[in-house]
Image 1: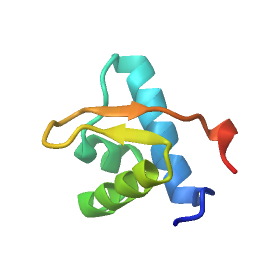
Image 2: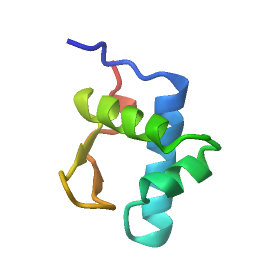
Image 3: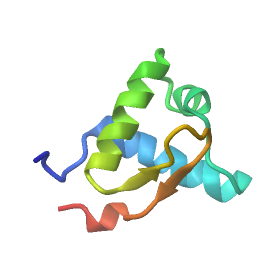
Amino acid sequence: MMPKHLTGRQKQIYRAIKDFTAEHHRSPSERELAALCDIAYVSVVSYNLLVLQSKGFIKLEPRLSRTIHIIRSLEEEI
């Protein structure tokens, strides 16, 4: 089982999702997250989204784009 604490990059992506969703009333795409977080490769975003999901902070809908749901706040981080 993975530790529940988040790395700096994971926190950055989490906050970008939260802020983008609040402003635009929809989830960002992985490409938008990469741009917002100044990440060169979308695969880095994809990997970190899967980690955030495995740690219980977000939920991803398989095979659907822009479906990132925040299900746990950073304040709940162990």
